[in-house]
Image (cartoon, rainbow, N blue to C red; front, side):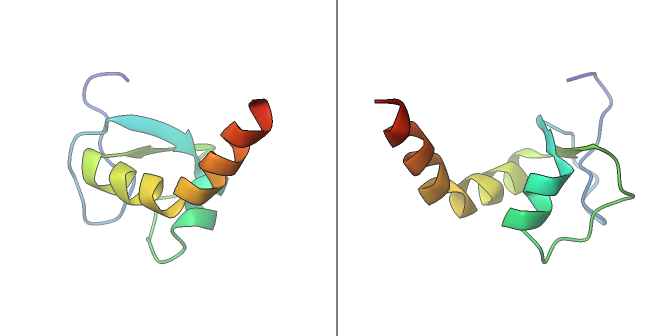
Length: 67
């Protein structure tokens, strides 16, 4: 992550920690209002944690197919 990137959620303004596909973020967290429509959305630590909690089951299923 480049220094100075901020969270892509309207009204947040915290420093970004991760960059994810906007499509995946919208599917997992449809209630969030994102700034613009870029390909990738930067998320702060708190919003990334919300994303991980919502996609936990899906990620577990993806890992199970690898074993």
